[in-house]
Length: 106
Image 1 (cartoon, rainbow, N blue to C red):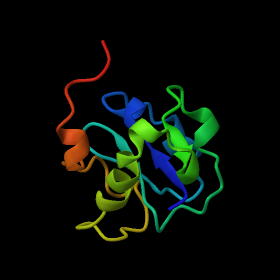
Image 2 (image 1 turned 180 degrees about the horizontal axis):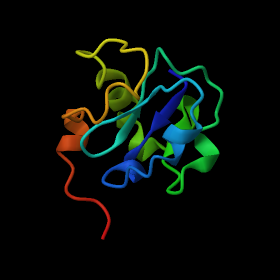
Image 3 (image 1 turned 90 degrees about the vertical axis):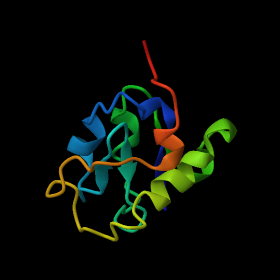
């Protein structure tokens, strides 16, 4: 994995990163977006366009959000590698770490 979407995305899902991603590797869960670890090409295009600064290079994820690395990886355990998020639409689930969080934001 190269880039990770972390907690600031939960209940926001701005999607600016989706529009910027040249390989369509950012998938939409119920409450947040996830980067597919095998489809990401490490281009970094998603990181600067995120309005809530939720995207980090894997080595730069803040210590208090390290669990989101696993959330991004294991979100795809039963999905495999669909080969592009656009054809999937919103996936009716979230990783348990995300699902367990209280509502975020306002």
